[in-house]
Image 1 (cartoon, rainbow, N blue to C red):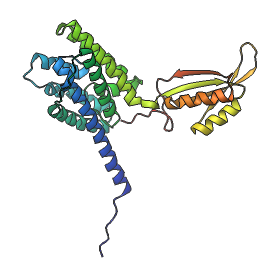
Image 2 (tube, rainbow, N blue to C red):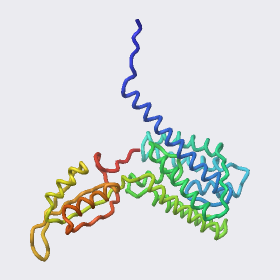
Image 3 (cartoon, one colour):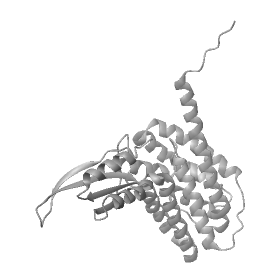
Image 4 (cartoon, one colour):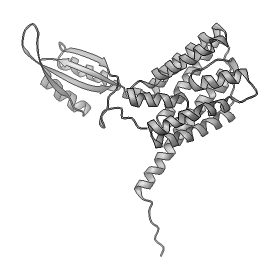
Amino acid sequence: MKVYAMPHPSLIQQSQSILKNLTLLALGSALSALSINGILIPNHFPSGGITGLGLLLHYEFPTIPFILFYLLFNIPLFAMAWRYVGRRFFFYSLLGLAIFSLSIHFIHIPIPLHDKILDALLAGILSGTGVGIMLKSYGSSGGTDILSVLLLKRFSIRLGNTCLALNGLVVLLSFVLTSLDTLLYTVIFLYVNAKVLNIVFMGTSHRKIVLIISEEWENLSRQMLKEFKRGLTIIHGEGAYSHKDEKILYAVITLRDLGRAKEIIQTVDPKAFVVVTETLDVMNPRVGNQPHW
């Protein structure tokens, strides 16, 4: 009787991880290609970053495909990815670049909108969603995404903010080549693209800092620990006027948990003093946004 060995669990996990990442890269590339071929090129909209440079040259030399310019500009960026980001990101981005190139070649679906503002809005939504999905993988499609990942890892600059800044530089360069109307439509596209990218990439895992001053701090801490299954920090303070000892609860929670946290505070102590602030970045294996590249 033949005995067949079962695949090693780690091999199965690696296969699932590769399939997941290729799926993210393929879906994101398809959405980005739809934005470029379906809206940007038909309307002669400039874009930003490496895509924008490639499109500008394609508009000036229409017989040369956009993707050829894009590939040439990516050579120095991939050298940066190899040196400063990581080998895994480099190789997955090579796969992403190949998938993106095939998507640009094969996906030509006309989008029948007759309002350029709507064109700019939809292009921003499609492009921002596509790039955000790709960056949820271990790679990217190259271009500005590589610089965005590099700045996120080095300086915690949000992906959408980097894209917006780099894209703006290319738009300024295109000022002499396009009309003012087209540039303004492009600004709308780039702004929506950056905002949607941040939303898709960060999602509801974006963290908020909550500071709570309450006489019911013990009850509040118990309730919040029970509800959210994550740690709280108790900060010892003193009232500047009363000189009374105060206990300040410090918590870092996700955006999706913020509403429930407010309900608990309101129920336990309606008189509690609560401050909710933004976080630039949070790093911790349990609760933070660990860089995955």
